[in-house]
Image (cartoon, rainbow, N blue to C red; front, side):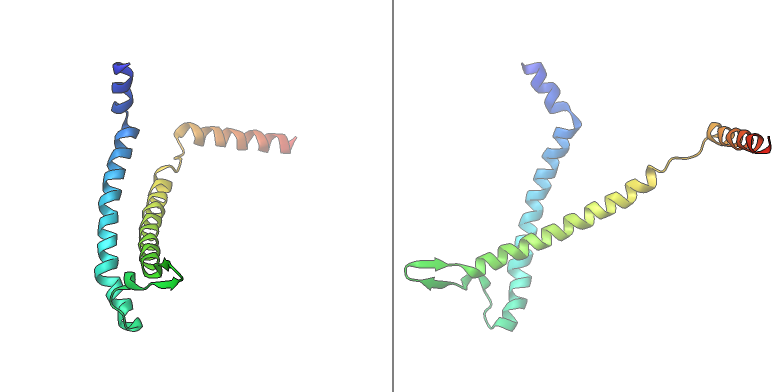
Length: 123
């Protein structure tokens, strides 16, 4: 069982996933800081309130933290946009590399095909 676990952990996909999770966690911290320290004050200038997370409305004893929700939506949109940019860039790069190149064999076979087609049409 230990050998199977070692083989599983040694696979590149597992290590890539672990690195992705760690970097994603660090990136989330940066995005939260960006939202709290830069975006919220900017929005606060227009709303007259510097801390969006303090926006709360109450109905009876229930408290709805609208400002915290707005912060989370902003964080999500920033992360989603960055992931979109990364995927779009990756797709553009990978399309360039996967374009098949015609080999000598492909060129010769194409010429033979054309000659046979030409002979068939001339008969």
